[in-house]
Image 1 (cartoon, rainbow, N blue to C red):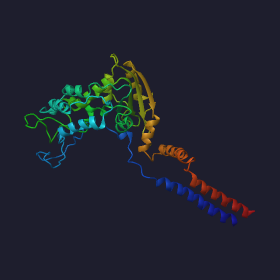
Image 2: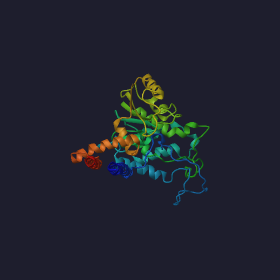
Image 3: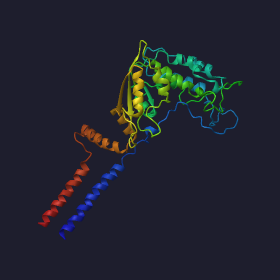
Image 4: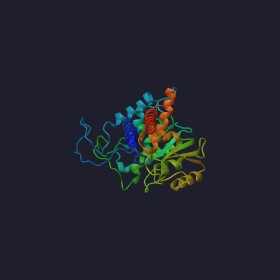
Length: 367
């Protein structure tokens, strides 16, 4: 009878410990909304999703969502140009860097597309614009490319402070996430109602701007380059795709016979927490990529989940199983740094000591 009296309080306390630990873990401050690597896509082409709009000027002071040219296109482009050069000071600027004429850059862009129907556009259309905006850019050992890892690659590049992606350059910043298309025989010269999403008779029109942007940027990088790929894509999608922008426009244009050459391609292969691993370095499409890189005369390395990128992924996948283990260890180390000892497990320790006291008391009563 005495054993039974001791057993139930001890069991109750043990259950209380388990519930308390689980409850405190669930009541942590909620993390940012998580993202999966497999859900990350390029935002480069803007939104051309079809909607029905009245045939009227959508830029008359009342916002109307359309598939057409972004309202205020000229003002946005010129404003971004000034902000990039005078406020943000892009990644290749220093205190002596000469600024570019923002109006001149916009006019080069406008000459390329105004009055010209979207389906008549090709990559040569934007050559003057990129000659002006990407002139003299030579990222040495800091050029970064990505496929299927848009968000995390740009967190890692840190707006050009760590590495430089195409989207960190003035040429891309001025046009990123905007929509535009010319309109022939029109006083304005831009179609503000409807821009085609694709042209069957000219498939190059849809990739003309970002294709030439990718090609021109790839031609400018030197030394070691870094490529962030996604090894957690679904079974129908590969980490390295031969139809990706990287495969079609960037890798083929790395310099190897100029004064400033690319010498090594470093692949950083990421695997999203709580999603099955589809590919690792040295497997499947990564073998194809390695062959292509070496055929072009470059050295090749591949690393699965570098530590710095693991930290970024767990910052966004706060509650993922793998990240919870890492979080506990990090918390213990941080507490030791702050307080000289880890406070992570102190409440559990006190409860366990109390349970041990109850057990010893019951044992004494039984004797």
